[in-house]
Image (tube, rainbow over all chains, first blue to last red; front, side, top):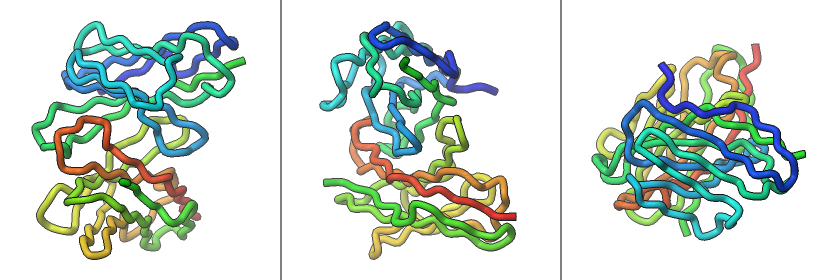
Amino acid sequence: DAMVIQNPRYQVTQFGKPVTLSCSQTLNHNVMYWYQQKSSQAPKLLFHYYDKDFNNEADTPDNFQSRRPNTSFCFLDIRSPGLGDAAMYLCATSRDGTEGGADTQYFGPGTRLTVL
Amino acid sequence: AQSVAQPEDQVNVAEGNPLTVKCTYSVSGNPYLFWYVQYPNRGLQFLLKYITGDNLVKGSYGFEAEFNKSQTSFHLKKPSALVSDSALYFCAVRPPRDNYGQNFVFGPGTRLSVLP
């Protein structure tokens, strides 16, 4: 039973060519996150949506944008991918603050982005 | 500054032996503590979390973790390791306030290898 779905699983793009990664969820969670993970390092939070409210991390490059057209879907747009943007991109979701910050985040399988 | 340390990059254990993956944290107040596991080319999978109460938390796949407030530790344990437990393990902490996503701090990860 897929709960957080990411498409595609593998994405190859060319240097500077815009790319969009997709995330959908069947959990009806109102918070959705995008993380970047490089080479088995810890995931790095790029931004998150709390309902429709967008929250950008201070050090997320402007090259990265996100859209959330409805509760179920969230997109990561990389406007001009550079070689340094090659990474695994992880989408995660959580329910709102019913546990006062102890909300579990549920991750999708990730999209591995290669930049040529 | 909030931080999570996993002092061992790599842990090797023989199948059937007990395993421990260590985590210490530096967070003000009483944080919420999580363990996630990541298999190759997959997203992070939730194992367990500590919110309050009993210091020993039981989770998925026979894993458990012990919260020690005085030592600010949250070590992951399993009585009998399986080869299939070989993966990358992440400890994460979150301070107890309404701050969705922004303060979910991951440790650097520990690679566990269970040898047959």
